[in-house]
Image (tube, rainbow, N blue to C red; front, side, top):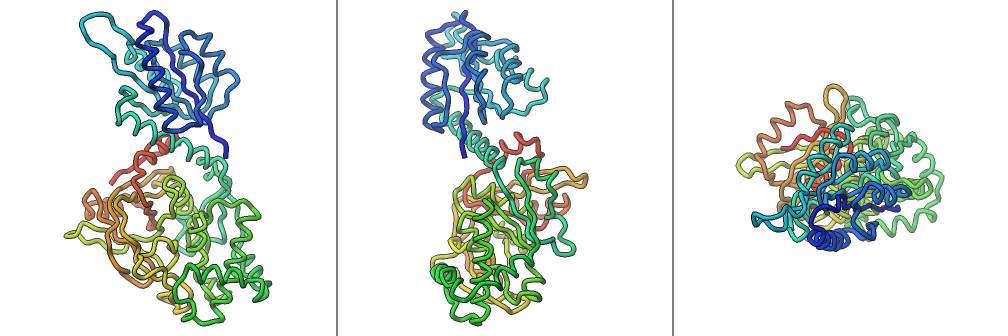
Amino acid sequence: MSFNYLYLPIGVPTFHLESAGKEFDKSVALLKSVDDAIIVPNEMLLSLDKLHEFIDDKHPDFVVVQNITFANGAYMTEILRTLDCPVLLWTLKEPVIDGGRLRLNSLTGAFSAGNILNNFGRPFEYVFGSPEEEEVKTKVAATLRAARLKAALNHLNILQIGQTPQGFDFGKSIEEEMSTFGAKLLSVELEKFFDLAKSYTDAEADEYLKDAKKRIVGLENIKAENVRDFAKLYKAYEEYVKQNNIGALSSRCWPDCFTNFGTPVCAVLAILNDLNVPSSCEADTYGALSMFMGQFLTNRPTFFGDPVSMDAAENTVTFWHCGTAACSLAREDTGARAGVHCNRKIGPTLEFGCKAEPRVTIFRVGKNAEGKFRLFLATGEALDKPQQFLGTSIVVKTDGCAKALVEKAVKNGWEPHFVVAMGDVASEMRALANMLKIEVQEF
């Protein structure tokens, strides 16, 4: 996926250009160190003509607009009329305060730009500070990662396999709604994959079985017929994903996998998660979308599951599911063990507790009572805990009050599936939500 962004150092030539030039050089160095997909002008854009000349033939995914000196609202108006992409507005500190000349007057320019952005109805991110400040670099980097994620969503094919089970409609998506995120929604019935799996010979599924045995401990303890059918289902899913350029998927599972096929899809989804194809069960397409966001930002699989337990004394929430977590998330002392479904007693599923992680982010894309999208957001630490229940589990000590998180989330009507991303990506998720004009609820 191609991605590029512009640095627009706007201003007028009537301020202290030596000071402005130093800030220009330092700003370029910072931006290049954060993300080298930058397109930089050869000089500061100190007139509307220079600005127009630089941006007229560009089609960026993101722009950093910096008041290198004061610039009136006409500059931002020109930018918004020409470019349609997310904006980070950057104000520079005055380099010297000595009772003498105002060197840059960047802050007044930022007020002019912010006024125009609001009048245009364009959300934007904002940072105040000098290029040397770590806080500025952190903000710029997080916003750029969010912009990259937004661009990736515009190229995402997300597959919805089958319908949500009765009472699980919260995960169902339609193409018009998915367009909010820029993604393309594809839909296929689950029976198609059953038919594909049944059409394969044992020999055709051998390479998939060998791969699974490298990832999953104890497959030999599961009924051989189920293991063979799992390998065929793995082949059906993986080949369809490759042939159709699928970036994430949600899959119906119960009861059909047990009643119509005889083998669960849990372990297939677990492996797909390790193959960088975020995959949710129970046909929760917004869960799969959330998983894609988390995996994109961390370059690691996410955990998808239900909040099933809260310990007020320990300040923890346990997330669990039947056995679809990525094998790579398993604790080192157990590995990703094979088991049978906790209710149906048919395998293979995955059985393990997740390894510890110093920083995690809990989130999901959901909807409020009016059907408008919103984002759940909380942070914490994944503790060193063994498997909590049959299936896969992760125990998160939340930064905020765990009891209050559960109470508020239930009262506010949040869906019962959440994503745990391995890393702190809260800043990126806030920025993305702002770019998409989606409400954020923090816990």
